[in-house]
Image 1 (cartoon, one colour):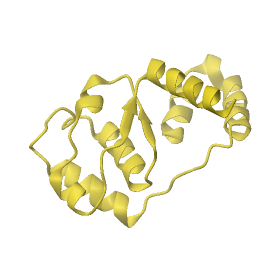
Image 2: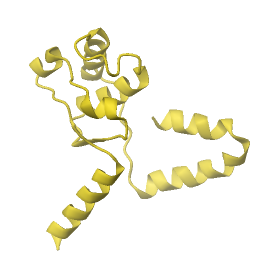
Image 3: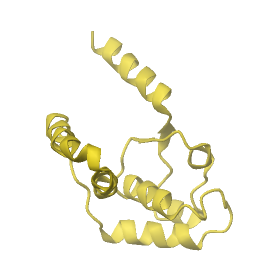
Image 4: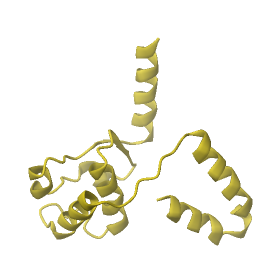
Length: 121
């Protein structure tokens, strides 16, 4: 996703200066980079074959992003896309003990962060 973001930024002449700011933000937020692994490969393959839930069949990039999050056991998947929020992962993925993540839209993310901050106080 970072590569896509940078590519889109570089396509627009006026955003070239923003690339440095973007990289600074990534460092400030301690963003980690996830790399392809065998589990990701298997999850993406299974999601590509799945016909039981066709909500994101044509959204290859979204399937890969969701596959990364699932394969790395992320706690949340943040998206405003209703299709991804309602997507049911294939049973074959659940059989290898991977499950759909809790999906949040931006408002849900904000509310979750606020709840967690209040619990810490």
